[in-house]
Length: 249
Figure (tube, rainbow, N blue to C red):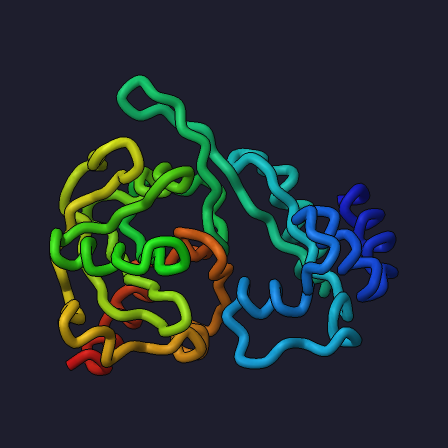
């Protein structure tokens, strides 16, 4: 806790120009725009002004899900008004293989990685325009290239929501099969559709905008990833599913 407070005191004094310089160094592009990258990552309708960046700090401590003293310390400061959260991880073994997993907020002290959850899953539109139609026509969710490992983060009975960039959620399905490979560059799971799905010939005509998802669930997501964290619990997943069914009907 004391370490992260020191970090916050230091980083809280960075100006927008300092932040953009750090971002440009990170992406190795001296002309990159932090404002544009921020809009793309969080699916904002309008960019923030430079003066709105770094106005306040949100502290996140990453630690073991079984570290009760650390969790108690975070809870102590959080209940006293400090903007701090705990992001737990757990190492566990399945069929002889070790897995390292982060868990979504709000955290459970000892979360079960096999529990049924809702997952906003990207259709890979940024890189393969036709990927969404392959997923729909073959009744699957797929991840490609270096992102293939995300398929192992979802399990049978999870509800997955197809997140189509620049549009919104275009359908939902229940995972029904194990993870499989389709050639060297694609990993997938079979699904059973729970909503109407768009067709290739007509294109995407109906969808639930990302902004409506945030309003409905009362929380934001990190959109610039194959799996949009945080996960949804069972009640959140069914709430979103019900709304999506109405929109796509």
